[in-house]
Amino acid sequence: MKRILPHLATIFLAITTSAQFLDKEVPAYHPLPPAKGEKLTPIASGAQLDQMNLEYDFQRRAYEAAAKVPRVLHQLPCYCFCDRSAGHTSLHTCFEGDHGSHCSTCMQEAFYAYQMTKKGKTAKEIREGIMRGDYKTIDLRTMSGPLA
Image (cartoon, rainbow, N blue to C red; front, side, top):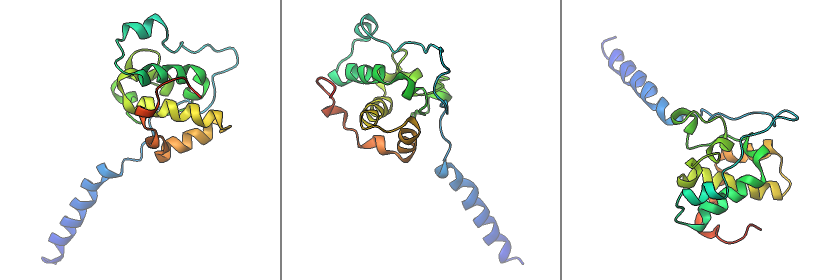
């Protein structure tokens, strides 16, 4: 029994401390589109973007992409976990102000959502792709110029 107890304690410790690496929690999102007639807070644009002093073209393009698919973004989680730190309720919230302009995760997810929407994917399919991490394939450096 004296030999088993230290082994059990080691196993217990390993299991409890490894839980932090298995964080499968999905950030906040809305599972359905906004209700008919419900107005979403607008995506930042124009003078708002000018005031953000954006350094790179892809930052502005991310907002343009987000503005083209706001109802989709409303239904997507944001894996920078800004729901925890900033109280965001979906990826859409990231682009209502300046948060999306300085967060590569938000921008990658917005470009991914825009591209997948253009390919005919549903918000649910796009959300599943984001949950798999497919947005990580987006190279922000190539996202300059007009949206395709």
